[in-house]
Image 1: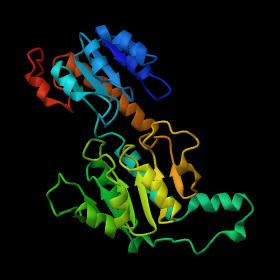
Image 2 (image 1 turned 180 degrees about the vertical axis):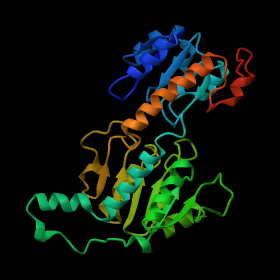
Image 3 (image 1 turned 60 degrees about the vertical axis):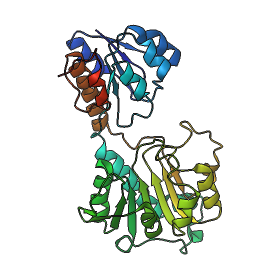
Image 4 (image 1 turned 30 degrees about the vertical axis):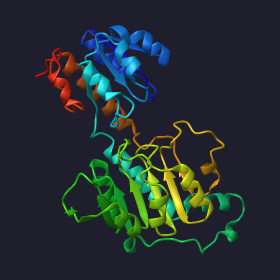
Amino acid sequence: MKVLISDYVWPSIEIEKEFFKKNFFDLEVSESQDDLMSKIHDADALLFCFADINESVLRRAKKLKVAQRYGIGVDNINLDVATELGIAVSNIPDYCIDEVSDHAMSMILALNRTLTPHSNMVKNGKWKEVAKSDRFYRLRDATLGIIGFGRIGRRLSKKAQGFGLNVIAYDPYIKDSQIDGVKMCSLDELLSSSQMVSLHVPLNDETYHIIGKDQFELMPDDVILVNVSRGGLIDENILTDYLAQGKIKGVGLDVMEEEYPDANNPLFQFQNVIVTPHTAYFSQESNEELQIRACEQVFKVISGKKPDYLINPEVLKHNDVNLE
């Protein structure tokens, strides 16, 4: 059996090498998209991170039984084609919950206290020039609106409540009016009522530019906006305009519309914008957990069992798929 890794963003794949060697699987790693196309034709399983697993890649795979995502989102694989070809697609939806919620909370706190601009001013010899007129929210008097109330959104709500924040949430797939002391409301109500907004939804046709001009118009001036989910949720052109008008207190981005943004990106000119390079998920512990659990899911499918988190259950109806 051959397992192919399309891409990874951590220093070592020793965990994968040890796991598959112990189970007598061959392991290969592609070096580029072209290399992926050349190596996938005889692969039985695919481990993928951020690579584009498009229709051409999937149709090139003649033996592929499972495509396992290193992570949560599966917007970079063509699910319809995978299902058509009898390829089970799975992910790891319940790892890095603490890391991502910690990252979002850290951004909220840093932006509210204006930590980065004030630190830069002091380092440039401007201690006396730090403006005390900047807007600082007293957390126990402020409201955090969480868009997407899944695992990460709920973990963030508990941490935010620990700081005294009032938390409200929007999630169209949740019918309850209240969960764990959090009021569920419409998106418009959330945006107009929250001094801080944090995004925790996948990127799809429904959520693309879920924050655009109409949504910014609903937000109060001096809003804090955080996105640690997916680039594309925020219309960055509109965001730039509102920042230039001074209508936003601060923005925290761990992801952007351009996966690897150019240093000249207009958002980078603003001192009240914090950008991190898609590291919200990361800790040594979470990464090792992700690697071993992804390997285990691949092994289950190769062994004829359903993965724990099957994204395309319709694949079970395929004539060539027989998973218990």
